[in-house]
Picture 1 (cartoon, rainbow, N blue to C red):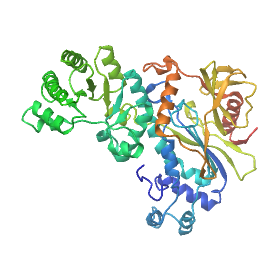
Picture 2 (tube, one colour):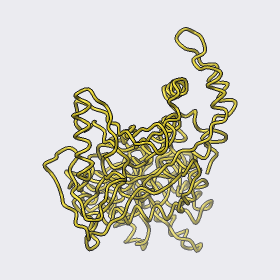
Picture 3 (tube, rainbow, N blue to C red):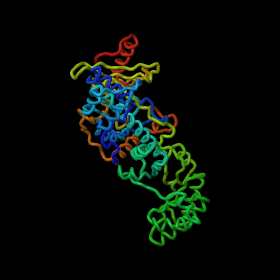
Picture 4 (spheres, rainbow, N blue to C red):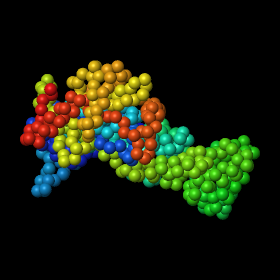
Length: 493
């Protein structure tokens, strides 16, 4: 992949992570052991599922979790409000030998996930774990958002290929590259982004723009010249002037291609009434003897528009989706958060579980060191339980809705299950072998296919059962009451 992290990655952070790091260091708290967990509270796009993505990019970033000399020189130049250096020279010197020693567990890419489930769990020295917050959120939030959007768009396309066309509208070069990767994980078959093709092995697709046609005296000449230059890549953009006349011109050039031993791959529609134009274009192509020529559609598509076009009987066989895919158009962020959930002075001590309160129940954090167990019966998913690592689920368990304690579900002991969080780093060393990107894409497609139809609805989807294991819910309730009466932490039961 491109050298996004040529020497170091830890300066990709918010300043307050570094000011807290110095304060931890000065107060002698930096080596306390901490557990942080990254999760989100609501599905993006008002959907019923989310596709985890970005872990492999995070692993690449954490392989460069250091501060190089240029980083330290920059930090030494940062001034506080009084104009003096913000960071102590001794603190910066301590960063010179920074080496990641955290344990990191995460849900693999391509797995379908749900609100409140930890996507990433970090355990290790407090200062280190704090410094990882921004980079984890930056990478996982964005790629998970785009992979989920891509999965929704691919569902709308009902098995027809979707090509990601969004680089020119993406949020900068890295946003474009990350979006192309995540869109492929979510189900797109190809990208227009040549750098993503080189970096990740994603198939690339592209033909020509309106400017190509406009640079010639007439449309037929433009198509003929393109066919001479690229006889094995002829998808003609036909809506520069009169769309259906453009289709007729493409057919004539397609006949010339066939005489030379090549085939017209298809046409592309980028404006106008895509349902009507595709139906009429299909009639013209079929009548002319080109039943296999694809009709590619673009023009600010998303899952809602694609669904509508299909309901109208549009004869579109390939969907090119750009702006609304790579930008997460109708929801700009996943909203994932990173919360401290446990703390202890040193290894072997009792954990003190931490809770963050709020006037909004959805924003009250869950204490503990969590794993997610996914249960199924006869191959059908029946629910996910978030549990503390000390809990014993061998005799079955009761899951409690974290926002409505009256909603509970008994999980039988005999239910099949899998734990979702996998070891990624141990003592700062990567112990996880990331699968190839095609394998991740296949995992995502299989995971989405396994979901019930109600979860895949775009409007008012079914809510998949996710809850806290009952003893964890009871602990959370006790800590809320304790914190509101003036206490803050409790040891593990």
